[in-house]
Each structure stands twice: as C-alpha cells, then as structure tokens.
Length: 159
Image 1 (cartoon, helix red, strand yellow):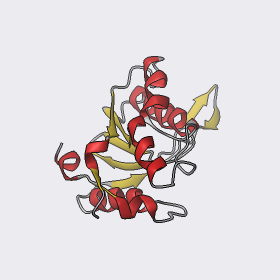
Image 2 (image 1 turned 30 degrees about the vertical axis):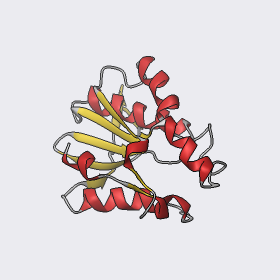
Image 3 (image 1 turned 60 degrees about the vertical axis):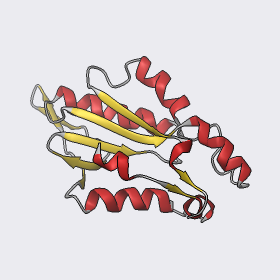
Image 4 (image 1 turned 120 degrees about the horizontal axis):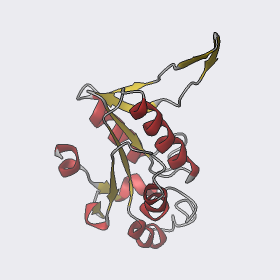
C-alpha cells in the first residue's frame, strides 16, 4: 500500500514521448527496484514419459517473496492474457502466492484526450475496462490477483 500512496501522474510524464518505456513506467520501475524488487524469468521443464518439454513463461516485471507484479501502462490488451496466464502457471507450481497488476483506470482517457494524447492511449490499449472481464473469466485460474487502476485523482497538471 505504501507504493500506491506515493504514486502520482505528472502531466509532463503523459506528454513526453516514451519509446520502449514511458516515463510513467520508468518511474514505477525505479520505485520497485529501489526496494529490492527484481525482474524475474522462470524456466519450467515438464517431463512426460521421459520426454522433456520446455515451457518458458514470460518474465515478470517485479518479483519478491512469492509476489509477482506486472505494470501494464500502455500496451496492447493481449498483454493481460500473458500476465494472467503466467500468474496461473506459477501459482499452480507453488512458486507464486499472489499476482498484482498495476494499470490505468479507463477514466484517464478524458485527461489524455484533453492533452492531445488520446490517440496514443486508445481504447485497445491496457486499462481496467479491458482487464476486469479477463479477471471475471478467471484467466488467472485459482491465483489471487490484485488489480490497481490509476485514477484521475493521481493526475498533477502542474508537474
């Protein structure tokens, strides 16, 4: 909860081009890295009748103490499927206790539109409106998932 209380959404981070990672994602990365959270990949091997099959999962953005966190700020919404599938598999293998997704609330679209950035943050990108149906469909299997959507109250027009 500490991290959530420290989050803000500065106007300068919205209007600045991001490239691979937006300034918003970079800020979240730095916050977790400073507290010992690390990006982590998992190598999974399945053996059936002596035949080994690799089943690599996608890495998770941050991992610590059996908690995996993914930040989906402005990706295409199929990234949620990947994240939830990874959470499900790691939970079923007793590696993960809970998955967390940090994303944006759909209501932020109004702010993006007013700043002329609405096309960059379109309806097909990651936001709570895309995530909730996937969670309701139990895409994470039995893995508990906490989802946090950044809302308008975090917006700072002066920063």
